[in-house]
Length: 375
Image (tube, rainbow, N blue to C red; front, top):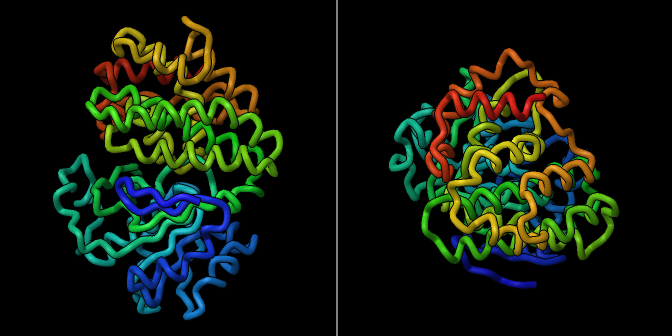
């Protein structure tokens, strides 16, 4: 078990969930709202967490696969009805991002879109944000230590809400909670973690400590993701993947890149409903090829960290890992209609992650990348 102070307080290790009661007391949260999804509630996770909240709690367990503005307002109604004063976010990135949206609107006037980063909302988010304790049950998003929430608005835009005030006050990262994660979700969330480590490392912003963390996270994914998918009960693999996901999240302040600029608008589609981590896995090889001449020596440093042969093609290594763990290779295999690609390209160039891609990308560039990842 380790306590790490980097951006926020993190309790990491098997069994740290038992400290939830003390964490809530430290934060002076007396009536938390648990934000989670129906699957986790049915699987008994809410009861496991509730055992450490003897004073009771409110519950919103209808988090959608991609969190929406409508769900934020539904959860906010429960917050108000229950008289809550803090949030326990239980689940993957969807539940944690939704919790951040609730924490924002519980303390700030609407409408929600005024706080979106691309609409100038960053300085409008203040320290008044309600306190969030994040308990991840997947190993991928890093949202438990991230400053952003990705939310799909009523008009279909999937926008980023970004502020240091949105970082959860405490992250309880207990790998025990990931032991029963199915192979498909283990694979998809694991590739999400890898995409975070790679993209934050390649971002042109100067942050050597974050880059060192990203390289270590990428190494852990390459060493342990296959094992975590093949044998979910492997405690060492689960611990290493939980740490890799955490490390990816710790680097978000460097910004992401074209992989996320592409996956964000795709994730905003109402049909089909697409998993964020799987999208990242599918588009990442094309983006790695696109950026190859704009990263200095960073590909060499990534190869070393990922324990690849000198000169090995990073795009091939990522595609091979994705294939080995059973993820689809193309957007068409995921059911994405080809007709949406021009609109996705227009939205990608407007996404906040575009600004920190190492190679500037136009809408035409994005359309070519979407088509490359499609077939």
